[in-house]
Image (cartoon, rainbow, N blue to C red):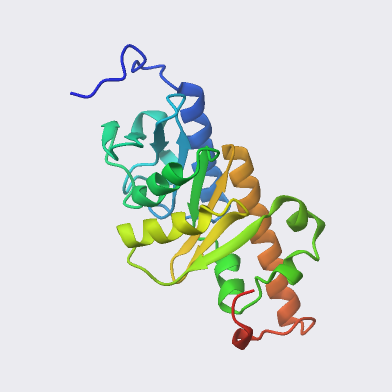
Length: 216
């Protein structure tokens, strides 16, 4: 049986786990994820491990005891419930980026609508001071099978470029990273607010929806 030693007691990483659970509830209450969709992870104080939300657990009633601890080197679950089906995405990001301490996967609606409409362009986003200050590069990957290694590798390859802070997964959702859970949450919320702004401007005819322009 794999062991981290005496640290694996009831109070192990309790502060980190509380912040993770609070982040999950916040995203759920904001409508960024549904009961079973989306996932969140935070790097453990044992830096070669991360805590992640479990598979098919109610986001509104999640507790710190429900979380799964995963070894970054082996990819094995060390303790807790079965990890999210998207744990591979989180795993590959932590392997690629030592500076990342939190990963969020959401299904935020306006961001996906703006992406499909070709509105998430740098010149449009940077019209906002907040987007310019807090959002780095936003990349995308094509439609790939959820929970697959192909998807995990594709997302982590985009985030290996340290200019990027978010990846749109076509037909799926968004992955955002941060040096802390607060930074990742802030990026998720700002991206959704800016996407909402752009969608409404497009509906008012202030800016043009032109999918032919492609990603920018």
